[in-house]
Image 1 (cartoon, chains in turn cyan, blue):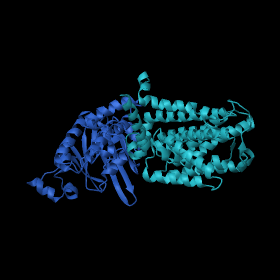
Image 2 (cartoon, each protein chain N blue to C red; image 1 turned 180 degrees about the vertical axis):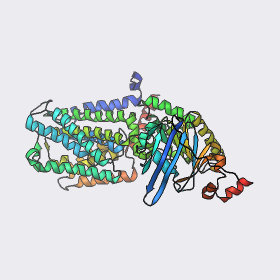
Image 3 (tube, one colour; image 1 turned 135 degrees about the horizontal axis):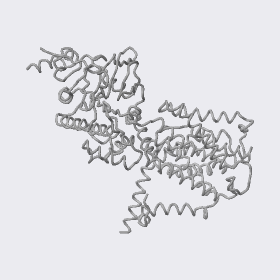
Amino acid sequence: MKISVKSFTSPKGYVPLTFLIVLLFLPLFLPTYFLHVMITMLFFAFVGEAWNIIGGYAGQLSLGNAAFFGLGAYGAVLLTHYYNISPWIGGILIGGAAAIVLSLITGLACFRLSGPYFAISTLAIGEVMRLFFLNQRKITFGAEGVTVPYKGNSLLYLQFLSKAPYYYIALALMLLGMYITWKIEKSRLGHYLVAINQNQDAAEAVGVNSVRAKQIALSVSAFLTAIGGTFYAQYIYFIDPDFVFGLGLSIEFALIAIVGGVGTVMGPVIGSFLLRPAMEFTNAFLGATYMGVHLIVYGGLLIAVVMFKPEGLIGWMGGLYEWFLELLSGKEN
Amino acid sequence: MVFRIVIWERKLGGGSSLLLEVQNLSKRFGGLQAVNDLVFAAEEREILGLIGPNGAGKTTVFNLITGVYPPDSGAIRFQGKNIAGLKPYQTCINGICRTFQIAQPFREMTALKNVMTGAFLRTADVEEAKRKAEEVLDFVALGGKKDILAKELTAIDQRRLEVARALATDPRLLLLDETMAGLNSKECDEAVSLINKIRDKGITLIMVEHVVRVIMSLSKRIIVLDYGTKIAEGKAEDIRSNENVIKAYLGEEYRRAIRQ
């Protein structure tokens, strides 16, 4: 990518830059609760990007990504708990490696299947992991869950007393996810994944090893999702199998990308920035009086998108963004 | 009436001009013997025709050669190496590429990206794949439509696109499955000259075709299948007067037509 002065004087350059600068300075102004909402938005944008690689580009509807998420979360917490290992190593390296191993097993078992059968079998893998961690009580504490051992303000242990550091890590994760996705999209692998998604037989006929391409996509997705799990555990300080390995979480990863727009770099970001606040605010305002109303709002949004804009909101948002850019450059001339 | 069937005989020893040798190939689907003990070969730079009535097993032969499914028995030697049982992407890496009877482009991709997907077989570099794809698109006269989505191309352009996508993989052997079905006579002529151009690049072609006029003019040698069995093989002029072929495929009308 060429970067010149001109890149920043045209709206195409300075508008994204302005967004980024606003995001960078946001923690200085936002009250704690809104900062928390922002963190979940950035964080879910990241795990949505991770899902998007296998679910969007390769078109393999994975409903088991929570399995990788849980490994990242449990890797971080349990290894700190038992051996005082930093979550950078325990969660991201060891948990991430475990997620990659699980992705290889998943690939071996599930890539023979396609369509709904693939989705169902990945769902089963998530459930197997959930039940395993639920039942190995001696090691994992089962349904009681585990609390992150308190270490005070420590970058090494990925624990902070204020929300701002978590915010910046979440922002960095989202940008990392977008960058990796963008890199894949531009590469041969990205072309292959889209080709497999559109017509696997035709792709095989022109020399695409579809199993290998899908496997790489799943493993990258698994590793990134595990990093997400580590971050989640360190941010919330508590994990239990029903949530981190839960089907609800797997579905949420998928929804964020589907609502925003599958197979695009910006899709999961748009999906997360719309769905997360909707979920958080309805939960905050209505959660106490009407339990579960946020789920109705969530479901309603999903139905609306699937019915009226099946390619995701990126269609509208992209058009709006283009229009905005034209408006800005029009004013200049 | 004089007719002669030239039965292909396996060349012994250094017969290296054979690119593809199909030896005693058989495939059964349940109660249907789709291909039965089939023997044939394709020489380097040849345009070999494969004809026969519907359900004769022509597409199955393509599917066996490209590895869509493994044969029940028999061998497929490509450049001396047995490739029977390889997966489709592996046969493509070896240098065999095919088009489909019903065009199967990547519908939501532009023409250029479609062909780039093929070009990526020989290079991981995006710019190089793009250059190669543009070159091939020009070769099949689709250069001006490279930025159009495949699904928006006409059926004929979609077939051209499929040929381009296959050519981008640098095949030694190209299998064309009814590329000309539904073309008018002008389009047919364009397709014929394209196929000749492909052959002139040093690529061997095997084509399944129903447009008898076309295949007779393109192919020096034709194989006729019926119920999965080879019923004739030989030069075009011999095939068209072969009693079995007329009975199974060309029909009595055709006999009357050529007598006149």
